[in-house]
Length: 190
Image (tube, rainbow, N blue to C red):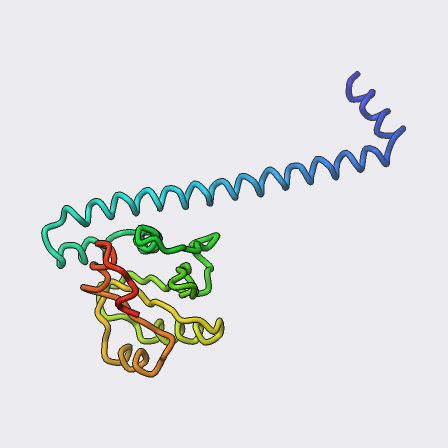
């Protein structure tokens, strides 16, 4: 009985029926998009919270070697948030990306003395890849910005050569990285 009445209404008002279907699809697409945005917002919030716990844990570790070992084991996304958190604690303005992956090699930005600095964060257990340093330097050139390549590994000879040739690029690792995470002003390494 209900199916017959519904069929009769659809036949009597075909244009309105099509509009109703289109409206339904638009509402469903909007709800689906909103759900995805919420998931990314939740993920960002979770990584930020974890970065805060990592910062607390770092202060409890007995030495720099243990701190670097610990940093090499955390999630790369938490490492990104940890760096951004450290810059915020220094009173600097941080610009976060909307997503963690597909960022084109740009993990965030920090404004230092009214200048935007691009950030590339890498968790390495060994020497930094010179190719990654070159890629980031090209990105800096493309955006006409300076940048901080911050990593947990060793900076090898080839990477140092790239660093020396680039006026835009600064590499922060090892003791400098730990000092910044402990609250030391990043400006002294620029």
